[in-house]
Image 1 (cartoon, rainbow, N blue to C red):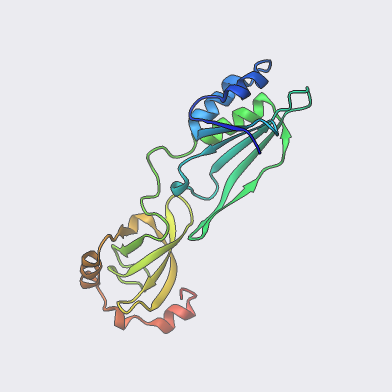
Image 2 (cartoon, one colour):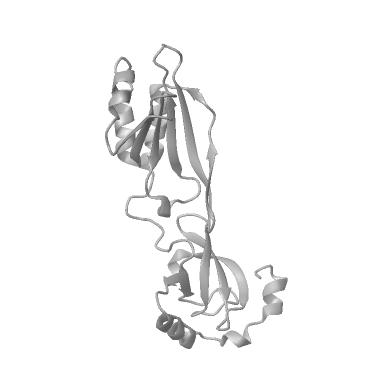
Length: 212
């Protein structure tokens, strides 16, 4: 069984012993503070620093950094994982090339971590029920849908449905044009505010345009 030690914004004691002889400790501690969590695997000499805000991931962002540092003097290695896709079934990640651990490599990871939005997160989560707050293409304001994919910090993919629950269209929508719906009363009010009755939507036109 692997022996691990977790910490928040600090280095695991085992890692501190391994890298005490190297100039990386301060940079690793800084990266841990930025991402949020560090776990050290004593069996494989692997330190994993990862984000903890799993409900706020967006494609293209830094997710985790893995550092392999054997205590026998072999070359330490650095591996970085980015968020590739975020859908209703979970997130997928893409790794960069495994490379030697260097100060420059750690600084690049720190730079990417600093670019993560701090307080400007997607205001709408996966599988959230949302309503359009303005007319968009052939979709009327007030239309209800479900967020099925986070496209980036400002756009989500929404599956819209009519009052009977039948799917009408799937379309990318700016987050600024959506409002979270938290109750059936909100849904009813949204439908009542729709500029065009849902029953009057031209589904043939939506299908021909590739929106359904």
